[in-house]
Image 1 (cartoon, rainbow, N blue to C red):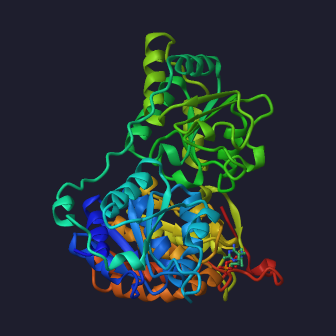
Image 2 (image 1 turned 30 degrees about the vertical axis):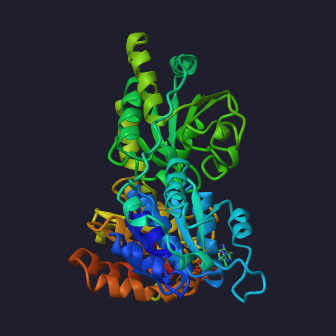
Length: 498
Ligand SMILES: Cc1ncc(C[n+]2csc(CCOP(=O)(O)OP(=O)(O)O)c2C)c(N)n1
């Protein structure tokens, strides 16, 4: 067995079940070997699209996904999507063919490229070590939540990998890391801070995505009277909870912002509490106590001053605090009351906030369109939003069923990632209707992979088939149909909406 085949099969055996890419001579054998090993391959039209499909797939499936690219130009085409994945700490494996001779026309310093965008570069170095290095790359992606570039030199690919057949039988998927247990002192300190609070608000972030953290946070909030919000990437986590304020930050509705600003304690759970989530700090009252819980100690206080930082897994820490609460303090309502519950139910959604509908006979107000789409599209959906000035409309007006129903590839704020995000998310959530909300600029920037959307959506499930229609409908929430800023609609044409 050649090294390229051995590496491809090892990646499949190590648990990489989904690979996206554009195949060239350098990654052809490797990709075929992955398929032979059991991975599913989706051929994209452009490596930029493939990178973001893989990123979105990994986020929405909770598995390590892979991107397979040709040497040099295949990798450079994918760099924006790789940067987005690396910034978002997506467990993604980029497998790239590599030339190591600087005079080759394909040569670029692939290791430096990876480092430049925050990805972890590694290389298959010998035929003897190839299998172990391939599995180790998957382990780094999974266990450290990193985007890893595995360089596979062309000069090695065609060499024999001694003993590979037998060794492959021993390759197993790496274990996910054990959840980080918080210290007793930190649990006690957090419990004491919560006991003092009268109006606590929990803001859950990327590190809280998943049913275990949701259950633990909802139980702790119930006992301590906390209100629940999320960062944009965790949007949907508390969907259906009567005390959910939906998103904190730029997408927050006026009532949500008012309640977060009124908190005397804000706890960021697996959440950076960065300028986007806290509106440059304006959502934090000057005298509020700010706490952060994160399993990565380097994340604590990285974006703003905090009063207490707890190193620990979100679900485990919330559970430990709940146990300490149960042993000591009485349950308390915080600011929860029947009146507030009714107010949240009536006003926390943007679609319930009154606005003057600026639609005319020729153009439709994007808020009105977004509300109509929210009504039209099935609730079981996965929403992907491109970057751009329009993004608030789908971000604020389209509801999502849970945190797996919202895929937000915005860490790099690049336009042009939204369509590929929707395709990757759709493949990870095949029973949900994918909705791609794109501006005209971002849509056309990524239009090559619309072809993937069409071919995939016309050959798969009925739900998926409907997706094409919704994608195009959502694309219309752009300046094509919104009022021109330079020509406001006449008062006569402006109907007032409640
Ligand atoms: C790759 C990239 N290039 C440029 C920008 C700067 N930029 C931000 S919004 C925007 C316009 C996007 O247009 P469109 O997709 O039509 O959405 P709109 O902003 O008009 O709502 C641009 C070019 C960016 N964020 N990313």
